[in-house]
Image (tube, rainbow, N blue to C red; front, top):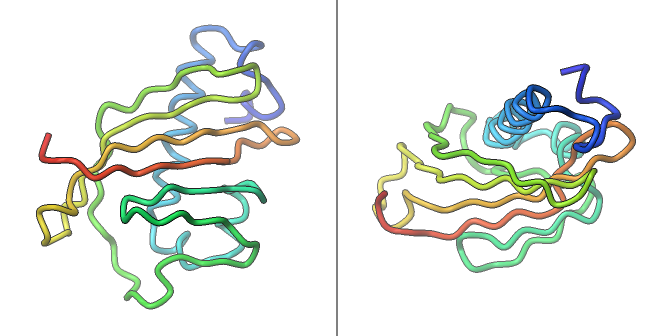
Length: 140
């Protein structure tokens, strides 16, 4: 993804936007990986210092450097599925990603499906998430 480093969305053509979409999708997937969620270094590479999340639980989370996620869970591959992933340009260096998420390994049906949105901003040539929201929904 060298082509995306240091480039604003405005500098990209249609093909570059497709590459950006694939790149942001991979970053979203990285945030779901257990090895990322248990590493403060990997998390800090993906989240901005002022990151905020409106969690599907209804809580609001403000990121603090050195935070890790899922520290008390076993390191096993959770089966997530991202559907209907789209990007919308908000400015030259800011995009909105939206998608549906299915947690296949979730046993509670009311916690299995959610709508997701993330705002990504370009910082010194690196895309970082500045905001995320997860909203529980019925099966789609």
